[in-house]
Length: 238
Image (cartoon, rainbow, N blue to C red; front, top):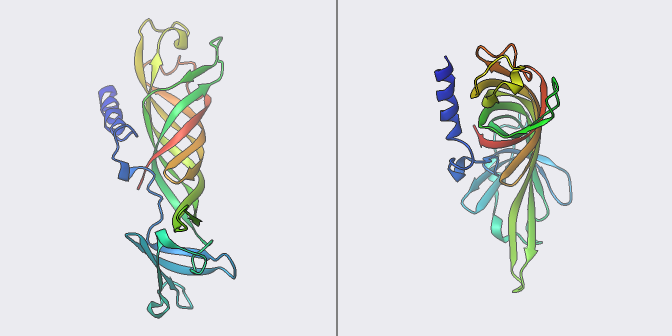
């Protein structure tokens, strides 16, 4: 069983930021879908945005269910060239969703237990995360020195939820009250709650969790099911 969990950890470790392809990281970017459209001036409305290449086509939605795009209402524009006369200037798109991510806890701060000082641990781990999320996509425009308007979509998001996964941790006499003479990397099952903030391609948050050591030393491991605080990073969105 120990070897099975070790293999699972090795497999998940391949998805860490240093190894994962760029297109799988922080994939909460602006894409086609249903949004709440908030113009710089005027009332907000529900729309469907079709995002392709460097352009976006915005459709209003038909009543009463507001799920069917009105093809006659479409307005298109190039994202990189939105000026003051454009309907998207200074606007934003928002949406709420259920978020499923692969995450890793970069560091864990374990409080002092059983006479062992507080520990700051950084070990290989991976967890599945699910939570409620809100994304805000803001249209930003500015003029260059050549008086050309350049525009882009700035993304901001936040969410909170639960995570669970596997990790490794040092096991030795110090953290088992001298009940083992071995020194090895043990496998833990980690779970807890987390809150993320996302800015463009960076998703980082704070987590509070609990670890359960798997194996014969679980009953004497001083951190077993004890709370820790950590820095959690989003790796890939499903």
